[in-house]
Length: 172
Ligand SMILES: CC(C)(COP(=O)(O)OP(=O)(O)OC[C@H]1O[C@@H](n2cnc3c(N)ncnc32)[C@H](O)[C@@H]1OP(=O)(O)O)[C@@H](O)C(=O)NCCC(=O)NCCS
Image 1 (cartoon, rainbow, N blue to C red):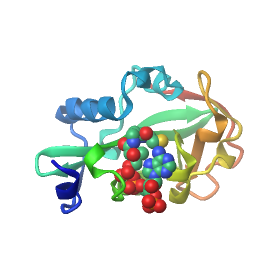
Image 2: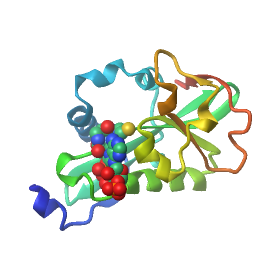
Image 3: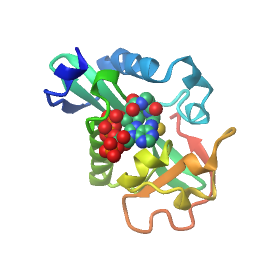
């Protein structure tokens, strides 16, 4: 689809289904390239499964044009969601879809009773969505990371109070 055509249609968001995994992998692979496996956040996803009801695809008809996933983790003793990867097809960028996916994922997480979301990403993109590096200052990731890119958003007021320690994946 061309960028001009892409801007004239509105994607529909739906929770990820098991059979969508190859489409999600494809979107992620073309957005991030092979370097994605070296990321520290990837260590937190290895061997784990995303919450499918809190992970979403954006559809134009039968074409998946964007995705976001959320994963269970703990930070110290605090349960949390790890958001990412988020990817939007090239032709659909800068039209608000990435922000819509983040907002939709956060609202679903809040409705499900989760207290906070953590991610590694660009503050200029996630900051306006309520994510802040200040809340994540004492969180440690497995491997090297620019701490200014570790961002937390509270879904329940006070959920990030005293947040500290290593972030760990949940593989069960
Ligand atoms: C990041 C990504 C998901 C954003 O999707 P998108 O649909 O273009 O996002 P939006 O249109 O909702 O952009 C919202 C705002 O963030 C800005 N923005 C988007 N990506 C940004 C980035 N990486 N850094 C800084 N600002 C960014 C946009 O300019 C826009 O600002 P504006 O409204 O003032 O123009 C998309 O660019 C993508 O798939 N990138 C490759 C994968 C990636 O890097 N994902 C992780 C990002 S940390």
